[in-house]
Length: 570
Ligand code: ATP
Ligand code: MG
Image (cartoon, rainbow, N blue to C red; front, top):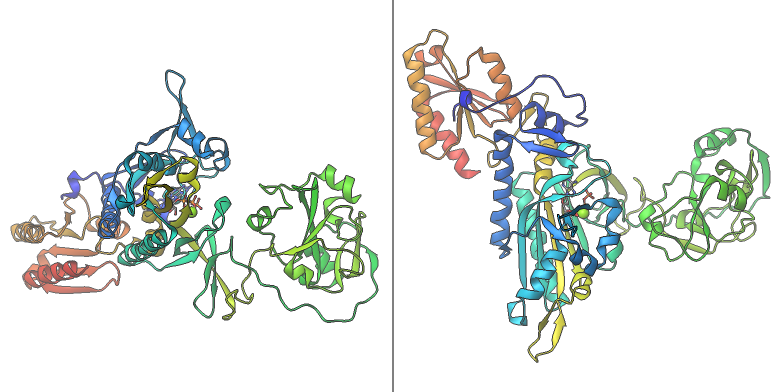
């Protein structure tokens, strides 16, 4: 491929609205262009990488025995009504469309309904099971905050697979196989990734794992045990209770705290550590209009854990200031757990506290030496908070470490949620109809492009591994005097490498070598070969590796052989 014919459009400037490295580099290297918020065009060079990722994913899915299908992007509303998700699907993510006859459709954000509809018409007998269908397809989700380029787009490419089974044992086997397949895919991409326990959402019960690429820019926080076996998304990691305080109970007393409204201010004002304070949040209840949640001052409420409780309304909704005033008799900064006329639900660590400080339910006042049982009552104790760095690991093996990750895959034992609602059955060997068990397995193909860059870049640009790079080699001729030998060698090296299956870009554009070197580094091409008159005088070309920066002068034949051999191993 000749760069002069290849629409390479790089820029030096960092685009103003791109917050993180992968987004900046994708724009600067001319891989993508924004059409509208969260909607991108893939330019030729970017599409080469996207296709390579897609190809690798397809290879491994095929090797696992999954069968490729292509489901329609546009889905009829009736299917979503059958599953019950037309009205329920997450916060407006669904892009709804009407056709000329005013029939309702949506642009598929995911395909459980469509595949279950296919399964109920195609699968009749237990002999056809298990089966795992997958596709690599465009999805649309009207994300509330599209950002970070391809990492959280609205239109994006996903590999999604759905498996069907006679029973849960068979489902578990395919789930484990997908776990291995995902590990192979991400391993072949050279990524530092972790499978982590994930929230099973409103479906509940069944197992679910996310695959995270570790990166400081990741939106998710992952809790790891120092022992090494436990890893879970902070969203769902169980926060174990510390040992209960054992100090003597002191006498409760109020104190004046003018203008103090936050835990930080309170802790400074009263000279106590935030962990000796309790904050009280008033939220909408499901059995009573309002419920008070008591959390240690240094801890964060975990909304997902809270809204799963029978006592609390989902989605978690904070009480209005007017409601708070009516129930507590004070503003949000002075709420406490003593004398509240509504049920108090405490986090485990809050329940373990003695002689704590909390609001006095009176503006400008707090209470010290408050104690459960003696001064106030707990209706129930649950795990309500985010796990934190330094907490004991829930598996009992060491302490928790928190790192950030980008979710690139999610595997899920769905059970019969969709098959039951949509009556997807097969006949067992006695001729009885059995509702199939289902698994689903998503992987963010376009998100992976960004995730890989987040892990593999330096201040000069992207660093692609050989198996994903847009080109394996860039040849940069240096030939200001138009020496024939230089042109001949460039063509010879290009011809030889191409003949041996290597993907080569010749940078034959007008202009000085400096900007060409910079572009090659920005795009992250693994090998650079510089061919010039001076080197040829000594019968050598200059070969540089993008990852290590190592440069060597090699005779042409050696350079070609070495590159071909390394690529064959990649
Ligand atoms: P997230 O929590 O990041 O919003 P999700 O849990 O909603 O993702 P799934 O429904 O599990 O996503 O989708 C499967 C995979 O699709 C995800 O693991 C992710 O890699 C990818 N994906 C999901 N949403 C987006 C998006 N907005 N942009 C790009 N990729 C996405
Ligand atoms: Mg997910």
